[in-house]
Length: 94
Image (cartoon, rainbow, N blue to C red; front, side, top):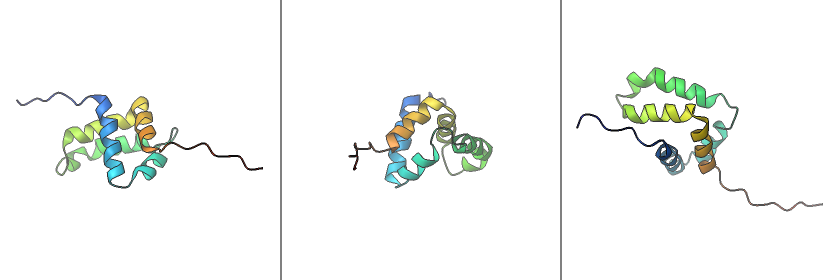
């Protein structure tokens, strides 16, 4: 089979969150991917621009999927939420 269907969009955020946590980069990625940050858009454009060279070392579908994830605000929020640990309620000290 020459054609494989694209990966479900929901799986992309989950897989990248697992990878970033395994690499110990979850906190850094969450900080860089905050809403309003230009990093996701610039990162997606860098992936598109570098795809011909990067595809020699990485799967082209993975690179394209990551670029699409970085451009999709809903998926980006999902990824960021998975990377950010739940903050426990802090007591207010007077």
